[in-house]
Image 1 (cartoon, one colour):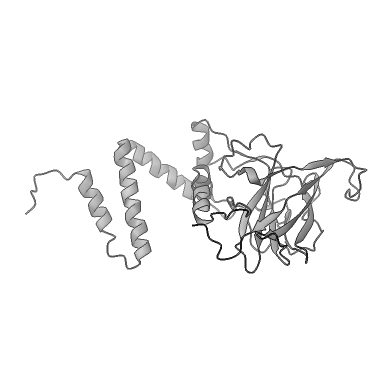
Image 2 (cartoon, helix red, strand yellow; image 1 turned 90 degrees about the horizontal axis):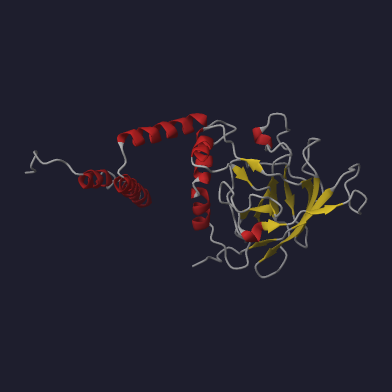
Amino acid sequence: MADDRRPVGPGEITRAARASFAGAPDERQRFLLQRLVECLHGYASDVGLTRAEWEAAVAFLTETGQTCSERRQEFILLSDTLGLSMLVDALDHPSPTGATESTVLGPFHVAGAPLRPMGSSTVEQDGSGEPAWVTGTVRGTDGRPVAGALLDVWQNAANRLYAVQDAAQPPGNLRGRFRTGTDGTFAFWSVRPVDYPIPDDGPVGRLLAATGRHPWRPAHLHVMVSAPGYRPVATHFFDRASPYLDSDAVFGVKPSLVADFVPHAPAEPGAPPGWEGTWYSLEKDVVLAPLGDEVG
């Protein structure tokens, strides 16, 4: 019989909590929950977590949940700023040699963006930014062009907001889906993206401010590419001129994804009709790995 006069120690609490999930019928679920208990309890023990700190953490997570809405996912922002989103992406999408590297999907993707003709524009609202002509080729790791690949692209406007954040923008502004040609090429008009802060008026923003971190992301264009027989990739094209490449608030920058937005004078061939200012061009290829080409 157990000695009921002996205090219950931290180890016994951890073992009991872990054992409570032993009957979970799904093996993976059982493993995940038991390891979660071990890691959470281990962290609390290692740092000597106080009740006041635990209560502050619960209050923070509660406010994080209360901040979520149809237009905002504060938990994804929290995951992003802790580097967890990028870690999961790296674990779940290891890049075979030569393939375009992935990065965080982010909270602003919307399924079902307009399917647009090749060479057309994603701009649906004047004042969205300085025009940018984006071109490239989708290839396999064997160098062969991938015909009919689907590009899903989205980005922010000159006011630093994505359409899903800004009720004044049409829902499809700066979004679109394009099919590559028979030679694997793609081309479309968009705008040069601008640096922007992640939403920092909520609990995640206050956490960053309290710890001396900034909320800024370097300017980038989101590109998600898929094709039959290939592993899909969600990636970014980052603007090399951004001052935040080395301090991205969500740790999403990879050197291979940085590219140049080349400036052009209004009179240069290829300028957008009616535009009288500087415009830009960006050339960036995407390389897809075939299905089954796993990193071991």
